[in-house]
Amino acid sequence: MRQLDEFTVEYFQNSDEAKKVYETVQKLEVELGKPLKMGNNEYSGKVHITVYAVDDNEEYPSLSVLLVLHGENVLDHLVNSGADFSKTDRLEELDFVKNFSKEPASLVNLDTIDGDLAIIESGVNSIICFVSFNKAKTLNQEQLAQWIVRKYVQRHFDLEGEYIVKVASNSVLDL
Image 1: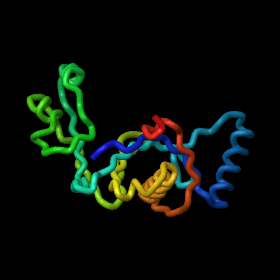
Image 2: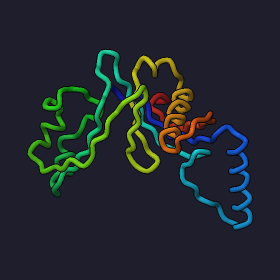
Image 3: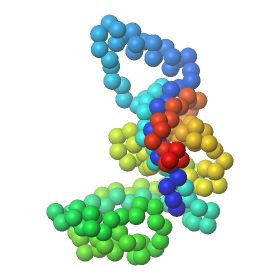
Image 4: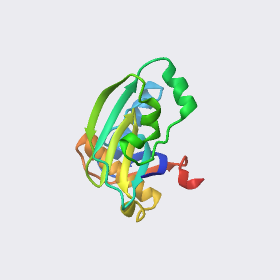
């Protein structure tokens, strides 16, 4: 598995209803004399996306694990030992696990991963996605962003639609 890309996407639903909502918000902003802040919704939003590609010879991920490490010395330990976020190996062979095996830890969350595009919430308006390399190599960055946004909105708002996307250029593909 390897990190394929990282970018921020602004999305807007390509529908008359979404345009009406946008115009209504603009009118309210004029009436109130200040901008309104809206969270992500089925009509528009902004999300930061990190994309990992799973190689054809690797098994697709099936479980996401969230651990917390305890103690003041954990951060110093991390600075000294580092972490490799995309390395795939047996759990007992991962350097991170070896380096922190003596630290107190708590398992906080487990989530299953499934489908051709797996999405993990990593923070407010921030997601991590897993795609097969075979699928990813057929898409350019805008197509990848549109696919992810469609799946993201479907998951969060149970709505399917077409979206216009604007990709901010913090992509590793642009380097």
